[in-house]
Length: 424
Image (cartoon, rainbow, N blue to C red; front, side, top):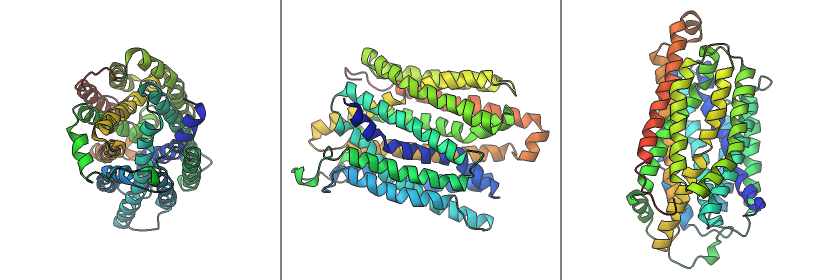
């Protein structure tokens, strides 16, 4: 596979990841800082994402059946970017309002932003299986995508988490990244998408692909495993600032530059390792070992790290970054399974498979964000309380460690139910 194809396809993931990391790391804290209670903030996010998640398989299926002149997937990538960018900016420029007014604004704008992410990211994910037919090379393509995802994490963290930029100003940078990188992908893949004039077979039933995906014995346990892993990942992301700031008493620079920066670097460098491992040992067992290693590290490491010291978090960033990079194997498996179904049915179904995949991501994110807010409310968190109650910082460590790890262990157990086949 040519590197230009990988880079061109993966570029859009930069804007997607930048937007998602800001939403996961900073949005809850941003609205709590405006005076919205943790419970209401978590509820608004959960409701918005839960509603939008229902649209993911539908958007994927529509892209499967679309007949645009510019191609089946590229038109949606462009439209999604044009929806996501302005909505994302508006989310971080809320009007002065009461608590219920902020609740309504957060709910409405987050629902719109999630819809933009759906229209952009679902067809973009489905596009991978059509660009590269070979399963081994497909893992490399998803490696490029994860590489640009890491770049997007850096853009998002530096934009919204920088001490020189506030979240509102940083949202403008992220919105620009969304527009630019999406259109790089649209331009770079010109002629590689399936144009409407080239589609001769009649479209299958709108809901037919839904039932096919949900009945697939290889896909369903993989989807459930990813769902629980995503809940754990969202809990980890949304509670990270609270853990590092109040449990470990680290500065913003230490959190964003040293820990998160090192984590992203290790993820990027680990992509090649997981591609090579999958070529030698397949995709299933290496992916299982990746999620199991992440669960074990989370459960045993984070509660034991002493405050004020960087050695433990740095070690966790290195090991965690390596394990997290195994996500490329999960998504490559989805593309393989979807391709098998499309070959048997005679019609494209990649969109609906990745639609359910994104749906699982969003429902998990909604639950994770809601759990984050509710757990903070349950322990009575406030900046004044945590400064006078050492026990509260300890509870944050337990939630961030074993509390998150439970979901990763459940994911690992479900992943063992994925049937072993020659190609996976």
